[in-house]
Image 1 (tube, rainbow over the protein chains, first blue to last red):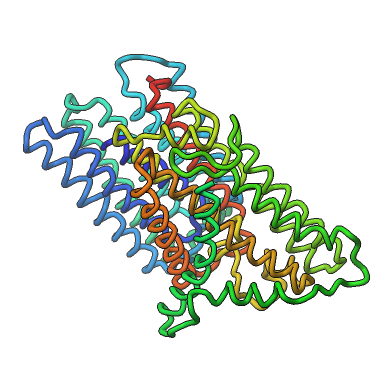
Image 2 (image 1 turned 180 degrees about the vertical axis):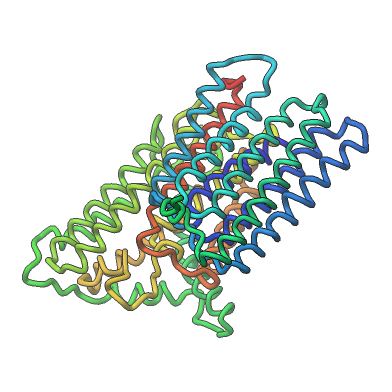
Length: 209
Length: 301
């Protein structure tokens, strides 16, 4: 069952590549949160109840509800244009994300280590690289935050692959990361949105001392 | 043999069900189920008018298109029963006989010398080109999963053993439905009801065809729908006895027709310049099916 959810997760990455609107990105992130909830529930059912509750709360409350809602709020408040404005056409993004998936597949086959769970490894690594790719090829700061969140999802899947031995620390680290990135960058974006009335990264080039 | 007869029967009511679904969702009663067939028979009774600028290609192309669809239907099996033609690797034959028909319909559109028709032909060629890898990767991974290369053997030995093969079945159905919508130029990729030549894809190619030729082209569309419906139904038939597979066949055909109707009623068409990337996404999804098959087979241990 977890494999099914992982395949759906990978398809959501492809959809992320061809999405046009920021609202679609937010919906995909929320959906990925729900998928991670399912995967974590299936994988970690044996660990103690407090830890499990914490992980499930983190995925369903933060990844699927709070962060999408907050991102939506930031977009509305700063009147950020709803288009994602990529540097490259979405057609090329789709091809590159597909290539990323194939490359990670081949890479994990080449590693051939018994200790790592292959499908988790492939999905986690392709999620990481997709997140990086989204950060690199999008104009706006808000899409950079979203790419960062995708990377976080990848790290989360990678830590799930370790399974029952997943330490509490990894959890805390992930959650702190999310908090820091979204809230700090949210405030950051708020400032820029208020002062410059525009949140295009290109405008940072004009800053001089 | 049985598949050929059943596909012909299904093609009679298929478009009628789509139109009826669209009428009901928009609050009308709509024409009868058999109305598209009646229109086609009316066209069959007429003669064709040919423009003076066209050559013989324009006159033979509709017949070749129709013939190619009939040839493609001949290789479709029915569960464990073979189609009329069946040999190893017949899915390649299936794809390229359809490609031949499409090629002739494209050059006949170019033959008319109308700029609109050339534009439509170029779009049709582009979209079919992107849909082709999706179909081949899908059939290739099913062949890899079962270890056979003909349609009948693939579908007869396709058994859904583990839960992950159910996912593959669902994904395969999705890809096949979308490929069939691309091939038939239906709603998310092309609007069959549009009245502006600039936005048409398939309709603009047959603007100059009339009478008998137009009837053949329209009936070929119905046949193509029923053919893809039969392919999808084959995914779920397995090796059940005949009294079970015939209801499954018609059930899936009706379900497919209704879902196409609902899709056309509630969905706007994609923007023309974004079509290519949505069609290419199908190839990526079928690539995921391929990776899933490798996972099932343990090639990817």
